[in-house]
Amino acid sequence: MPKPPRNALLVSACLLGECCRYDAKCPAAPEALKTFFARCRQADIALIPVCPECAGGLPTPRPPAEIEPGKSAADVLDGMGRVRTVAVDDVTAAYVTGAHAALKAALETRAETALLKAKSPSCGSAEVYDGTFTRRLKPGKGVTAELLTRNGVAVYSENALHTLSERLFSANVTIRRATPADYAAAENVLREAFWNCYAPGASEHLILHRMRASAGFVPKLDLVAETGGLIVASVAFQKGSIVCDDGHKVEVLSLGPVGVLPAYQKRGIASRLIREALTHAGNLGFRAVFLCGDPLFYRRLGFLPAETFGIRTAENTWFEPLQVFPLFPDALKGLTGRYVEDSVYVVTEAEALAYDQDFPPKKRVTGTPGQKRVEAFLKRQRPYVPDEKSRPEH
Image (cartoon, rainbow, N blue to C red; front, side, top):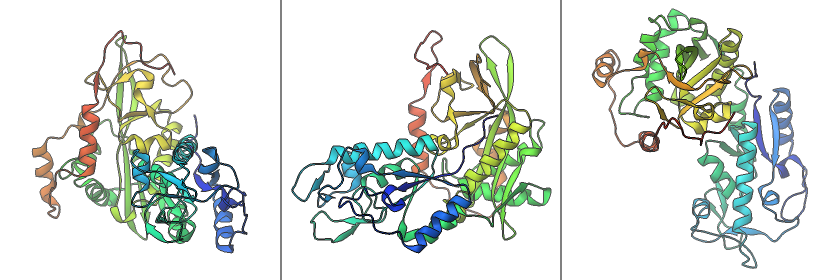
């Protein structure tokens, strides 16, 4: 079984001692940074060095550059702003190329977090120089930091090591099998995590409730994360199937729902919970794990588009959020067809409203960013054409 990926941290190469700054200087790392890197190595966190400017083809040393006044990194990525040197040379293309190189490194190593140099027009995560070359700062991100953030990578600077350490070194979080005493708390976690996220209100807590009473539930993969006696995250699995194009069925797993209390999000707890669950799933002999979720998050955990394997939705469409994690080499070789999940995942609005009466009242809201993202995915859904040849081989 392929192991779930090792934790990785993208790091500005200059912070690791490489002489790649614009002025070619190599200042000694402060003790706090040395201690932080030592903790990373002790925790088996791979440090992945990146220098977007060098990756974009710029030399060392090089003239200082800043995002032009009145523009942001988002403008630069969207083609509406420039990065220029003090001599007004346009180096936008190099900065954008370097940003994409850093994103590629993050995706290849499945890094969910980055430690980037503060204030840089490439790597700044909270503030950057304002474009006047007077060393004045303004709130905002660098080009690479903006692109990584857009793709779900959490970006920190060396000035936020304490916060970053809390995210990475969550030793006080225990992952264990759920017990009946945890069931209500786990449902509440999902309700809080998903409320108004992808639809007005939430139904994930009802789904979990039904799963535990169904024949296809997998109790050995019912996990929670606990800290200080509080259940802060939950994940559960249900048996599903691939209805193959030749007519036979193959049993697989469906992941989800999985959620983390809002106050504990952005700390790597969900990733750790899922990684541990995938390890258990492989040890139990299952073939593959399917889910419908945001690709920006799940691809960093090793999930692949189901379309890569010729696997469609139950309705026979190609759907970007449908992803799969094969649990051993060639687990899906030769299998094409429709992924069909258990009926416990089908919840009507009336059923969700009725079940929610047992919980404290919360306001339902429409038009949230997550809901709009789901709408965009649905619009891009494509019907399956049996003789199409566009599917890549895997």
